[in-house]
Length: 342
Image (cartoon, rainbow, N blue to C red; front, side, top):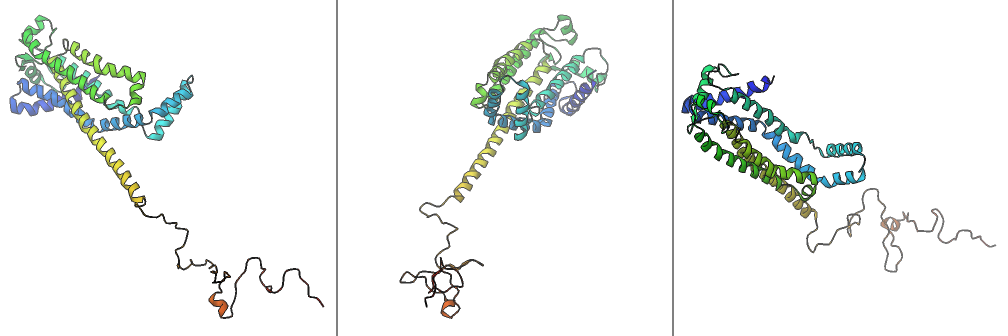
């Protein structure tokens, strides 16, 4: 039913086992353990770009979280209108909430596929997806510190006997992996929660999710370790180790980009701001002695007596000076409306 998941997972596992089998031997427990670990690394490398998009999307959603709270207060009893307004707000900011879930949604089927493939490696079985009978026997006979990778702590004694593994060896290997995987899960969640702003922390739903990821999930890994094969514990540990390192790298990179943007904005403002002690210059007021722009009329300047100073054209007999209050074409010696007496 889920062969579209089982075959790709088994193929990647087969490729890495072929690589490390050349170094440590095909039936080496280290070759199989490294094959599982690099299966995780391959998947996470493919999902690196969606993870960066997830972080950027979460950062943007935190920025306009107050606006989302305003929408909830504005339409407290209309859930449909709330959803419409929030979708509109997210589209305006270029945020896709489903994009943030993509890395997690992809990891779930891979985990299920790996769990199924490893549980299919049993003594006496033939081909398992991309592995032939020789590959299955190689995994069954491989031991890591005296423990087969398919065994788990609560496995029945008769099945442990088939693998030739003692329960004590399984416990000595599984318990440290369980503890380290649980601690890594906690610190991964803690690092993610530390990036949330105060508005997100004050949200009751976010607070519940933070408690689940900080405490319930690590305890779930610790409790599930009694039922998970050793290979699954290696998968979980390497996945959380990659996530922790990836978060540190991506968050540091994004913080550096934002600091550069802020520094650019500050430099631009300082460049446009007037220098200390400099007087502001009015661009509309022409400087003294400057020639008027093309087509602009030059206003007459006042003479010593306060009367308008004649222009050079007036001195040459080409006077064309307009005096306020006087209609053009009339003499200055006659007032408007006056009649000549006889």
